[in-house]
Structures are given as structure tokens and as C-alpha cells.
Image (tube, rainbow, N blue to C red; front, side, top):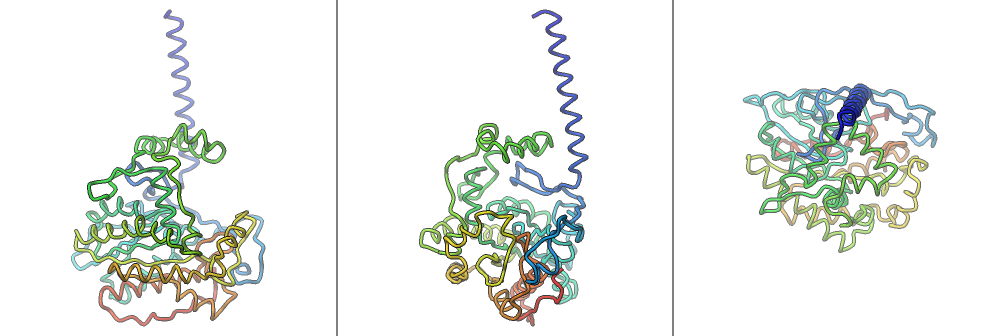
Length: 403
């Protein structure tokens, strides 16, 4: 190889490196308020100390059954941030005080709740209520992250039980957790110990790469959105083709096969979470949350989710009302001695009292302000029942305003 060829190769390499570096800097500046990131340890996590402006298409009319339209542009409805530990809460977490008791909750996007102002989030409301009920002794720490599922919570709890030192761990169980558990095992896979507890994802290599570089992360997102086959080639799944079971099949039909998937995937992981909590002398409980799709008088913006209505009708979600699903959960938790609470009855009563007021958002599918208040009451009641304090939160009405 001649000197000219060597110099040309070096020049090309330097030029490409400069272009990559400029693109990396530009993306980091542009995406400075993006907290969500891939993570080779937890699959995904949140960057610490990130402020986020909350935009919404929700209006008082579409949240109270008076309209089925949305504004042309979203409006700012509040702010949200991640704290010093990269958790979705306004308050930073320091060393545990001598007289302090901590409730660590895990959940998915319904619990992370970046669709509303931080002060509307049910974990924040519950924290205020709990501190008032316990004279400041107990507090709630929100470890939730969008698309989370119980396998990820095991990875997070292994680390957080030492840094946060929880006295009570609560899993906020979503209807799609079993489907997500199957999807995660297919996409990321897990290296497990002899007891089956996940230690880290199998796809640590490309998760580390996408965490490190915003350019690579943007390339991943481009492939994911436009060329899924190319995504699988460049960022291969751990167990391609393993398959999953749709949440509607479990929640709306609740057939025997779906129940078995729950037992062997979600249920097994909940038991592991309970055991891991007990290793640091922390109590453990589960709170089930619900989706709007099997509740009456909960319209949503169908244009955003083409095919969703037909899918729900195919599984008979409106007719099922989620009743068999709720009965199965209660029976499973009781038979496995897992303390359990559910938002189902509280939300059902609220809908009966005021059918027009939405408990989930219209454009977005997560909890409305009214839903957050009800979920907060259920969470506080569960905590108080575990720490032996009488509760007067048996019934709770949502706020008059839903914004």
C-alpha cells in the first residue's frame, strides 16, 4: 500500500470521525431533555437530573365526555423531572434517615406518568397523603419506567434495595405485564442464576452501544420505525421468533392458556421479587391497575390507534368488563400469599357515580387527573394496611376538574 493510499485512508477516517463527533454533539444538544435511555444493566433506565416539559392534547371537554376532538397543537400542562438517582420524581433521594421508612414502587408508564404534571402523578399524591398519615415517617419512592415489566424490576431491585433501603416494595401490576415479559425474553433475553433470577440482559453489547452514543441510538430508532428486518440484522434479538400472547387475550378472555402464561412468567417473577425484598427485611405487595378498554363510557381518540377498536371487539373486552381477569388475580395472589390490592373496584364505583368523567386520558391512554387521584388513594390504602394504620380511604371521589 502506497503512502498516498495510507494518507487518503487516514484523511477519510478523520473526516468520518469528525462528522460522527459533530452529529453526536448536535444530537446530545437537541435531545438534552430526553431522560429515557437503553441500559446494558437494566435494559432501559432514566438519565438523572433531566427536566421535561409536559405537552398534552387533552382538554376539559374531551376528559369530561363533552367532545371527541383534540386541539391542533399540544399545549404545555406542566413539568416533569428525573431526580439525582434517575427516578421519575421531583424530590432527590439521599441517605436514609434513622427514623425514615421507605416504600419503593415499580411500574410501567402508567406509574412513571410523564403525560401529566409531576404534582398530578399518583405516586406524588400518594406520597403526600402517606406522609400526612404517618407524620412524615413514611415516604414513597417511584422506581417506575415506561414499558417496564417484572423481570426488569428484579434487575432494578437487586441494586436499589442496597442504595434506597426500602421497608416495603410494591409492584404496580399492569394488564400487559405478561405480554411484555414474553416480548422482553424474545428481544433482550436474560442471563439467569441457578434459581432463574435474571442477572443481566443477553443483549448487553448493543444495549451498551446504544446507551453510549446518541447517533447509534438514533440509527436504531430509524431502523425500528422503517426497516424492522434491518433492525433485527444490525441489533439482533436474543430469542427471535419466540412469540408472545396479547394482553387482550389474557384480560378480556382469561382463558386457561393465558392463566398458565401468567403463572409461569409474571407470577414466578413476582415470587422472586417477594423473596428478594425479604432478603433485606422489606415487606412486599402488589397493586393491580386497569386499562380503560374494558370500562364503560371511556371513549378514546380512535384515529391515533387504527385497528385498536376491532382488536378489542374481537376479544370481547367491553363485554368482559375484565371481571374474570380480576377474579383470577385475586385468587392467584391469595393462593400464593401475596398481599394484593386493585384499582378495579374504586374505578368502577367512580364511573358509576359520574359516567361522563374520564379516568383515563382521551388522546393518550394513561390515567387522567381523576384517575391519578383514585390510584393514589388505592396505593395509600394498601401501604397503610401493610404498616398497620387504619385507613378511611375506602371510597374516594375524583376531583371536580380533570385537568
